[in-house]
Amino acid sequence: MADGIRRALPPVSRAAGRRGRPTLEQVAARAGVGRGTVSRVINGSQQVSVEAKAAVERAIAELGYVPNRTARALAAGSTDAIALVIPEPETRLFSEPYFSDMIHGISAAILDADKQLLLTLSRTAKERTRLAGYLSGNRVDGVLLISVHQDDKLPDQLTEQGIPAVISGRRSQDEQLPFVDTDNVGGGRAAVEHLIARGRRDIAAISGRPDVFGAQCRIEGYRQALKAAGLPAEPSLVVPGDFTEESGRRAMRELLARRPTLDAVFAGSDLMAAGALQVLRGSGRRVPEDVALIGFDDSPVARHTDPPLTSVRQPTEAMGREMVRVLLAEIERAGASGAGGEVPRSLLPTELVVRASA
Image (cartoon, rainbow, N blue to C red; front, top):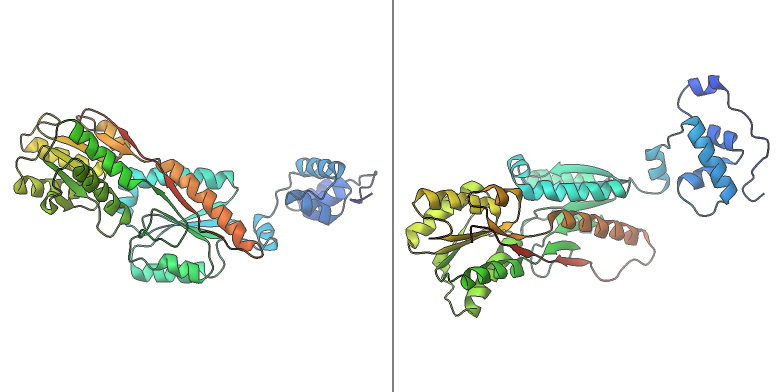
């Protein structure tokens, strides 16, 4: 027979089973096939007959055999591991819903792909250099990068080392690495168009970090909406934050000092909008009667403020899943002979969710 199946299946003694976990050889003996056939079944090869596959699967179930994941990965020239790198401090990772939603989507997709996920926080340039050296040792099959800043060299180092990598967002308009991003310009534009449609004319903005391209794009959408409506885009009405609640409070105090008559604010994140809301109410201004307010992300924060925040929804979990899909394709492409082609770029849509704050 093609797979060498023997009709008389030799027994495996209980004593052998008690000496340790079942081996590949024991599975082969129980199934009446060769060791190579068992290996092909375990690795999902199609070059096995239906009868041999059934015999091996039955033997695996009877013996309680668990494949050695590390050995399988080495044999296949892979590690079965994906690194998730977040260049941010723990305080941001555990306080901002964006990261938890992204990680949830990534981990679900990694689980579906039967891979292991390694989470790494690289907060300083020294840590990122050390991480690049670690990753160069063929310890992972690919890398997912979240919240990458414009001056971060780690993505380029990974490219130089031939390690497949995918970025959430972009470092610039002409990003050369595979990325998954949302339509930040369109989201910012939709938010300000909504404010203008509600009769607001003195509209300020709280931007995210200036070195984050997505934050720049949201403010670009803000400017586009003002220009289309014939309203001036005054630089003094844009104050930068860093996506945190405290930076939203600080920026809002500065905006009120500059323009006490402002009647609307677009914030580049829900946390900054929540901080701005506290300052507005503390100053005696009613939201939305006196000042309308819109955030970005549509995180749980938006639903639990008083009043609830109008916010631009970005599909954060879907972004995480899409990043894994793109990375797995890149890993497969890197392992194929003659790999090449266009760099994958995914841009997911945003949606304005209207609530009581605007």
